[in-house]
Structures are given as C-alpha cells and as structure tokens.
Length: 238
Image (cartoon, rainbow, N blue to C red; front, side, top):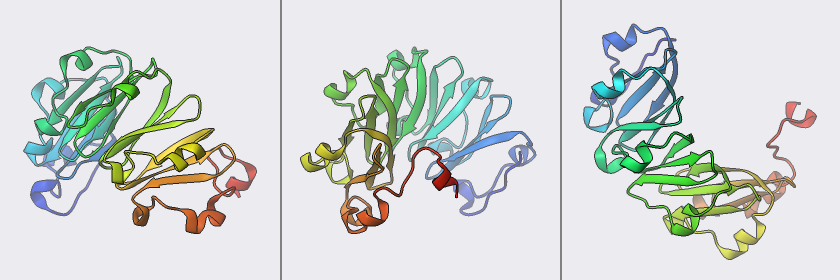
C-alpha cells in the first residue's frame, strides 16, 4: 500500500514524506506532470506540479468517498460513491467541472483525454467538459455502455453494438464509412494516443485512426481475426 517514484523531481519523481509514509494506497493515476493516489479510506493525495493537479485542493482533500480517479494531460477527476465528480488541476484541461455536471449523481465512469473529460451516466448518456465538446448527435444517445480515449479523440460503444467517435479526425475522431460498415456487434473498444481498435462478437478486430500508429491492421488481420477474445474461454486461458 505504499508508493515510490523516480524521474523529474518537480513532475512527480519525488514523493513527499507524508505520502511516502502511507500504507493504504490502492490506485495511482498519472498525468503528464503529476500523480494522484487513491487511498483505501476514499481520500485522494497528489504530488508533482501544483499547476497540473499535484496539489489537492482543501475542499477535495477532505472527501472520503472517492472510488475512481482519471486524468487529462494536466488535471485529475475523482468519481465519488454518490455518483458525482470533482476535478482539480489546470483549468483549461478539465479541472473546472461545469455546475450542471457537478450536480449529477448518476455518473458511472469518467474518461480523460488530452484536455477533456467525458462522464458516462447510468442513463446511457455522456456529458463532457474541457476543450472538446461532445457533438449533439452523440450527446442525444441514451444507450452508450463504454467510452475510451484516443489521446485527442473519444470513441463510445453503444448497446446495439455500433460505435461513435468524435475529436481529431486523423486520430480516430471520424470513422470512415468502410470501417463503420464493419463496426457491428462490437463487444469492446480500445484506444491508444493515435487510433482505436474494436473487437466484434465474431472475433474480428477493426481499427481506425492514424495507420502507422495502429489505425490500420489489415496487414496482420490473419493474425488477429478469430484469435482475440474479449471474454475468457478455455482457449484464452491456455
């Protein structure tokens, strides 16, 4: 339950003594310049650049029901057990939660990308804050079950097995029509900083985004399709 760190001293490489003495840390999340750690008692601590979330505001430091942490490049968000969310760090990177979102109590997960957060609600809707607005067509959906980040884009899986995306077009924020046609019966989606991958119920892997960064898997399709499993099976267990 303790933590050690190394690297650039002012960006989290030096753990403050009070945090280094803790023995109840259950999760650690990093942004580009700081770390945040979730304690077993529901509190959060942080270290690194104070401008990027390395210092927890007093109002957040006293909260004892935090259950999930997420990050953008320079901010952190904390989901509470009551379904609400708080954030801190650099304001233009998602540290300022708009009042209507701060008042919500049905947030299931929070996902961060470069400078924005997206929260998935129990209603299947998504809301967001930071520098990337959610398109109206996506905000109107009520059947989203998963949201993933692609660095400067988001992708969301719907209950009907289809996928929507938004953000930087060349990083997966726009899905080409031929790819959309293949995104049916999708079971899960995954993202890196430049591309997305989807796994279908038939075992096919469908990718889009920047090709050299994983957005074009055609050359290795024979090594992927039918060989990747989302759910554990006797084969995947070995």
